[in-house]
Length: 280
Image (cartoon, rainbow, N blue to C red; front, side, top):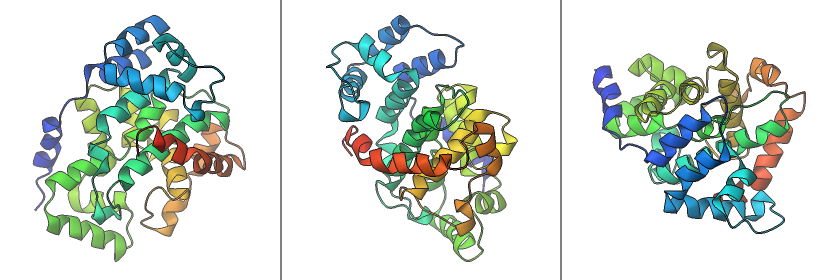
């Protein structure tokens, strides 16, 4: 018997995110922000400052001249990329765990998460709608709920979930909902709320498999980003039908007929370069 309350309570035992991440997330959630307030947050976090300058000067950012100040780096990359970077710095160790019950060996969940964040960042070039700055961090964290399942569920329960997917031909979402009464998107949303992250970011995590239920464009982007990451080999397919992109999401994002394929091509081209920025 699954103790659903104990499973959801376990979220509250997770280590909090650094103050710099939650402060940046709060800034991103506002209707307007200025470079100075972002600069102040980053300057107080030495590790984040170092990574920000490193990313701003990387080949992936295509900078034409050296970036030497936090302010210039923020302007160069934008708040969305900075929030994703700050979040990634904080959760990278957590996301490198192996989850064999989901077909993920050590490091594969991290690779998938970075690929999804890259896809969400790149999606702006193929969508004719404005994407919120929380999108990139939401895509990075969309599978964070799987870590709670891995940590809290007994091996025999995890095996039942795996059998439901492999032999019962159920998606991860349907198997979790049927057996546990909660799925990894919902647990991920609880984690993000526990960390004090913006509701819009939380929405993208909860509904990355069910974007039609969200009524928010962020869920459509995270859904598409998740599938794009898997399409380029960064992730695991439970079922062939899971490869199908939600047509309504593509329509709401105004991606066009070839937008998803073009997005996948860009992610495939840039993924290794972006992973190297995190030392992966």
